[in-house]
Structure formats: structure tokens, C-alpha cells
Image 1 (tube, rainbow, N blue to C red):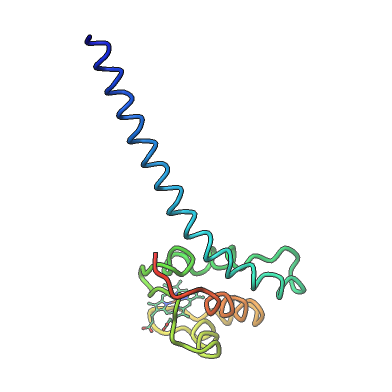
Image 2 (tube, rainbow, N blue to C red):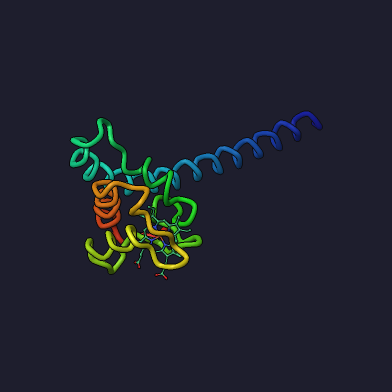
Amino acid sequence: MLFNVSITKFAHIAMISLCAIGLNISVTHAEEDVTDIAAAQVNPKYAQYKENFSVKRLFASRCSWCHQAYGLKEADGPRLSGTEKSKEHVIEQIAYGKSPMPGFRKQLKPWQIEALADYIKALPDVEL
Ligand code: HEC
């Protein structure tokens, strides 16, 4: 009897863990989908400058510590998806910054800044 109870308990815990894992996967998936869709529109345009260019990789290395979830989530910097700024203003913001955001014109090439702006403008107005 005792054995039975612990088996049931174990099954219960296993079920809960599976649900948690399932939820986690679907949330991560949702995030990947919209940012991947946006990136897929942008990457081919800049492949002429760098083979297998990935705008998400560039974003991850330079922007992620302040703009999380590839721009879908506010952190030290605001959420970027759905920005009201035009592409030109986004380019200006990335190039020159706006305190406390640093400017990137000395670290990034103009085409990289434009690729990031295209990516941000391609994101749908969703929040993670
Ligand atoms: C040190 C933190 C930090 C880093 C790194 C950073 N940002 Fe920002 N970013 C901010 C902050 C803070 C703001 C809000 C500034 C303000 O308008 O007051 C901002 C604003 C922006 C805006 C304007 C959003 C809007 O709608 O007004 C864009 C676009 C942007 N960042 C893009 C980027 C990109 C692309 C990168 C990487 C190349 C990057 N940022 C790196 C902190 C950061």
C-alpha cells in the first residue's frame, strides 16, 4: 500500500515536471518564432557583406545585456519591438546612443547598424 502511494506521488511529481518543461519549451519557442521570422527577413540582405550573417548573433553580442529576449523584453533598456522611431531614428540611436546607452558608430560598421535597425523594425509589436 505504502509502495502504491509513493508510486502515485512519483507519477504526480513527474507529471508536474513534464508540464513545467512543456511550458518552458513553448514560451521559448514563441520568442524564437517572432525574432527568427524578423531575422530571416534581414539576414539575406546583408549576406553580401558577411557569409551566413546572423543579425540575432550580432544583437546578442552587443545589445542583449540591456535589451533582453532579442528586443522583446525591457531590461536596463526599453523593449525595442514596436518602437515608434523610424528606421532612420533607430539608426541614429544605435550610432550615437542616448545616455545611458552607448553609441556604436566606432565599433560597428554602417551596414551592421542598418541591419540591426532593419531587424528592430521587422519585429512585431509584442512583448515577452
Ligand atoms: C548599456 C545598456 C544598453 C546597451 C548595451 C544598448 N542599449 Fe539601446 N537603449 C538603452 C537605453 C537605456 C535606452 C533608452 C534611452 C532613452 O531614450 O532614454 C535605449 C534605447 C534604444 C533604442 C530606442 C528605442 C525607442 O523606441 O526609443 C534603440 C532602437 C536601441 N536602444 C537599440 C539598441 C541596439 C541595437 C543596441 C546594440 C547595438 C543597444 N541598443 C545597446 C540601453 C542600452
